[in-house]
Amino acid sequence: MAKTKWSLDLKHSELGFKIRHLMIANVSGFFKNFKIEAETDHEDFSTAKIHLNADMKSISTNNEQRDAHLLNSDFFSVDEHPEMLFDSTLVEKLDDENFDIHGTLTLRSVTHPVILHVEYSGITKDPWGGTRAGFTVTGKIKRSQWGVNFNGILETGGAILGEEVKIISEIQLVKEVLVAA
Image (cartoon, rainbow, N blue to C red; front, side, top):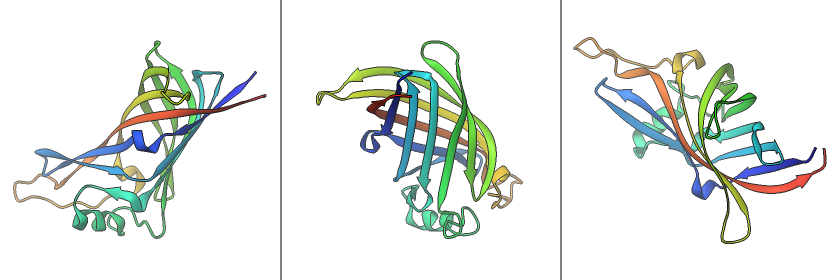
């Protein structure tokens, strides 16, 4: 069976997250540099094998002081752990537009299973003759599972940062080549 390789269109994709701050609002961030490689049987994403590699030094919350703090040992220790990795283990097709992707997330050299929800927008031809597929990816993780424990207590008793991190991403993949299996 023919395999189809897909690569990320970084210019039209976002790998983002949100976390509760002061327990009243969310702070958003994203990674400026990341790669996704996928392989499917033909164009069937229910058969996808997916690998993501994000450069932890490219994290941005649009606040230089906060970004510098995220890079140090209170959060991600990027000098020792420069990458965040995701590898799929199973794609579960829920219907024509919705999938759950089971996989492993490695952050700070700690690996745990995660399930991400994917809304599949379909495949289209672009104006330059290429084939593209679009996805919205969401999920939730508990940051302490990966050793990201920095926090503080407010005088009202609540925490400065929430435990749950929401993953919110928009992904465009470009079809590369068909190769014989």
